Image (cartoon, rainbow, N blue to C red; front, side, top):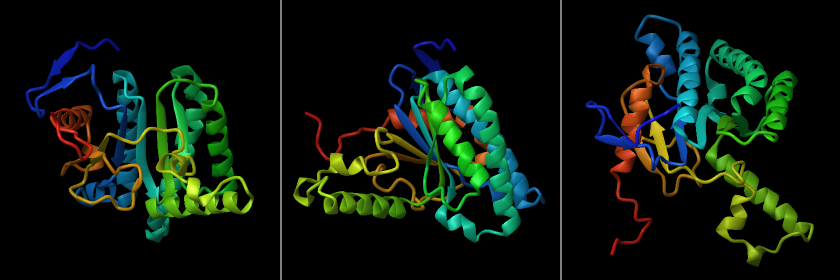
Length: 252
């Protein structure tokens, strides 16, 4: 997809410079249920439309050169939702996995999953393993899907893994650094997001990428996820490019 050095949208927060896009974007997929309820539809209808929105945005991120996209699809707390809603999400996940297995190599898109996969069915876990195996052979844009994921749980899991390595003599507590600890996270080997987008009007992290988003720029919008478009993504990127990222220091 050929893009000019500058691309202007009059209704975005300025211009998007495609030569300095964020390397990694994270998105909390929020607002599916409310989108459906406002239209007098069951919440499950919102998840179906939201799944298509994810497909559109993920493809567009690949096309414009985003290297990593991480989405919050299903949290550890989401199991508390009505059983029919959870079942719909799992059915949509299965459909997406089957399609991905057929298209990943053609599109050179890597697909990774972050979270505790043990509560998923054996069939879904098998499909996840197939996607991971295919991704090992690819080099393109990487899309990380957080399923049964919680940021606190991820940190606890990493701490437990490090403690086991210490007990087995493979690590020493006094040698632990932030960089070494990152190797125990689900996101090991993936750069931290520079931009976190949350549609849906809420302004909180909701236990998402707590370690990784320490220096991410946050962008909130009232647009519900099923209505999130390529133009909305460009608005978020334009806003990010207007931020002054000092990482605790000052510019000289």
